[in-house]
Image (cartoon, rainbow, N blue to C red):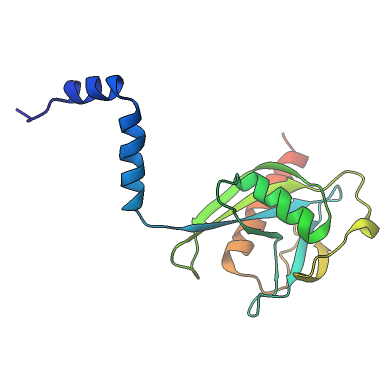
Length: 171
């Protein structure tokens, strides 16, 4: 017979609901701290995907636009914010594609989202931030990019291309 029954614990927490929040805060202190980043696999109306060349990425300068998730920030909002800051584009986030622990940073999660560029996209309106050197729109629906990418970005692109094909051909 357990010392304290589950029913007594439940009754106590119902009587003092603030105690649950206090227990969760104590529990969080004992858990590993992690960072997270979010990127967008952004397709234009022609089925091309946006890749950007980063200033601060030495080994794999080309990749997907995105960045670190801020404290309390929703990952979808991170993608919208980062893409707007880096390129000036206002995108639509459609759905999550991939979430995985980073191979390169032991306490970091990466999240990729399928996104859509504005239907009235005018490339003259793209304004690169100081974090980016260049951008390219690539047709990944017919061929994988010949640019070296980190594995997470390559996997996110493959998943994004499969999802985009399904959107174009829903049958």
